[in-house]
Image (cartoon, rainbow, N blue to C red):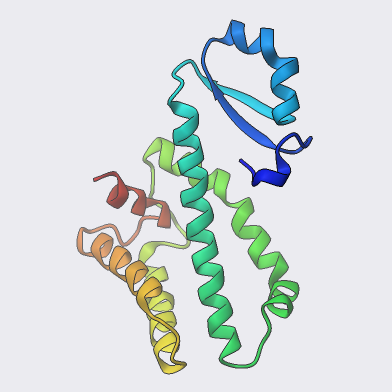
Length: 169
């Protein structure tokens, strides 16, 4: 996954599908396209699905980041300053993805800390603060709707990973 100038770079990620034997045979040539090429599956369509999954993750994260930037700008705070001040918090979010992936893959969402019922007040605060600062509320309202639906279905003691079930429907 890269933009055009990155093609051929050592860090360029390319997802491949097809025969493992063919991948091994052509790996030296494939590395010219991208140094971090990975054979994902024999099904040639699966790499495209990986690409869509990367894009979905990217756009969700970018939308949250840009909404945060607009919120901060309403107080005259620059996004670069925020990133510098909140680097540890933002990094810990990325570091938590493997744990969330384990919950999603196992379907075990019960959690002692950070349950959905604990998330709801903070999401509600984000909606309210966004509206008060004349920042678009669609993104946080969507999140609030997801959390409210899970709570209505009796999943208040589950982790945020429970929301994957909404997307699986």
